[in-house]
Length: 232
Image (tube, rainbow, N blue to C red; front, top):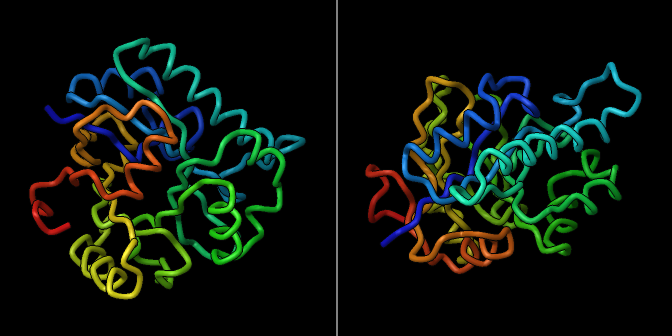
């Protein structure tokens, strides 16, 4: 038996571009047979609410609200984990970060002002991994394989051209530079009309963030997408 984990998902409580609530999101992923979903709401100065006294703290609070509401709705029916989709001030690139906890984010308010090399090194030092999301989308700058831990080689956003074939090709090149480069797949779910169709499959359910990080680093999983089957 295999277990399905979504690695790229947004909810309206913390991502202004999403229109589906955390509770609605939980029901959707249960319906489509997922065991685990990682909430990766946007985390950037662009996406923070500049109308509040402390936009950075407010952003973290909204992420945690989405996480709490999702977990309350899920109960023991779905594992809900917390990641972020990080955008640094230096570019329009987005990075999926797995393993950055509340304490780390609250205590390092300068994170968004770092470049990708510095942010990647810092996050790695604290046990987190950094995946370049939809690396071939218009407006994105290609990252050196040594500046990230891997690439999202399939992105299923239903209103974006993520050029997944090109992303996979770049990921394959990255592996010639850095053998440990991670491949991920994510639905990038934002709205009520989006049916989740991506992520990873594992032989054991992913129940903690530490387990997810270890699994991605080990490569002991399969990408969920028939058009990528056998290629990763």
